[in-house]
Amino acid sequence: MQSRRKLRFRLVVSFALFGFGLSALFAFAALNIRSRVEDQLVNSSLMDDAKYANQFAQAHPDAPGPGSRLITGMTKSERTIYKAPLPWQNLDTGIHDINELAEDGTQHHYKLAVYRENGIISFVRYDVSREELGKRQLIISVIAAVFLFGLLSLVLGFWLSRKVLKPVSDLAQRLRDFRKNGKAELLAPHFADDEVGELALVLDEYSQRLTAMVERDREFNSDVSHELRTPLAVISSTTELLQGSPDLTDKLRERLKRIERSSRQATELIEALLLLSRAERRGPTRGETTDVGKVASDVIESQRPQMRDKPLEVELNVKQPVSVNAPASVLAVALTNLIGNAIKYTLEGRVTVEVSANRIEVIDTGPGIKPEDAERLFQRGVRGEGAGGSGAGLGLAIVRRLCDLYGWDVSMRPRTDTNGAIASIVFG
Image (cartoon, rainbow, N blue to C red; front, side, top):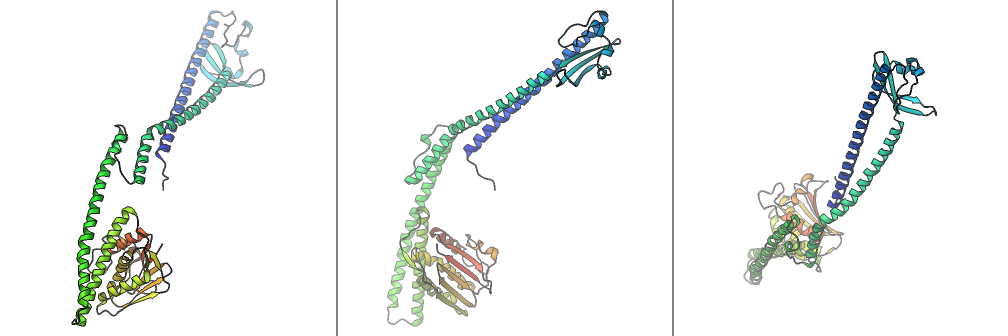
């Protein structure tokens, strides 16, 4: 995984590397050109002097050799090939690099020009040791200059990055202030007509669209809350009155109870969804303490009509009382989905609801789930195998959103001892 770096850091490093690399490249090119030009000039001058000495010797056989700081001086008596060092005598015409010991015993580097014409060989020797010392000093100076320019590039990169990114930092700070104040203001008037100003203008347009969407969502939630709660309240009150009638048969009374439970479930679901819609914008609502065991018992009773004639038992086992700081409607919606799914998919056997320390588990003996599908079932629109085409695959997705809102951990896993699945909620 690549580490993320701030934009300012990347700009500074890029600018410093560019400055260092450019100065190093320029220094290398300058040294290389200087060395080549110097070699060409020295070689050309040596060959000219060697040729001149040869021609002078041919024109004035008895005269001493011409004086030059580049030419090895030879008197009249010394002008014989046997006076030259033996290794020189076999050299061809041209420039040769030789290393010899000087009179002081130190090693010196020479350039030797050899010129042969009409049986006369002229030698011109040039000591380049001093020039090499100067070249080393120049290289040290150039390296110091490269590092100095690299340091200057780093300082300039810091200054330019701060200058360039200051409008971006101001934009981010204004956005943070809007989040603290809870009120969005126009950003574009505070910035120049450049790239940052264009970004601020786009953010303003996005903020306006988002605000309009939130307002429509809030109005829709209010309308749903009013329009659905009212008929549900009428259904609930009517069924309650009908149950008090003395001439009701047992079968009709049971149906009225089912209507009452369904009405209560619909009311709880609406309250939970509206709460979820509001809380995802403002944060979860707390302050209400709910007994998990009691809510689980109510949910089990409301789900018993799903059993019909199946050979199925539903058992509630409260090992340790647990209370959560959340509305009862939220917990009821979550448990209704988990317990209802266990009853729907279990054709025979047992569904056990266990309440223990800081958790609740729904254990069934149904067909079970595949380990790789356990997390996928909480995605929107995904249904378990054997759903038979019923449902839209939204129940567990709603459960996950409610649990995430209140910091609970909901999960499903297959049983290891027998067929079936285990759905659990761990309360944070």
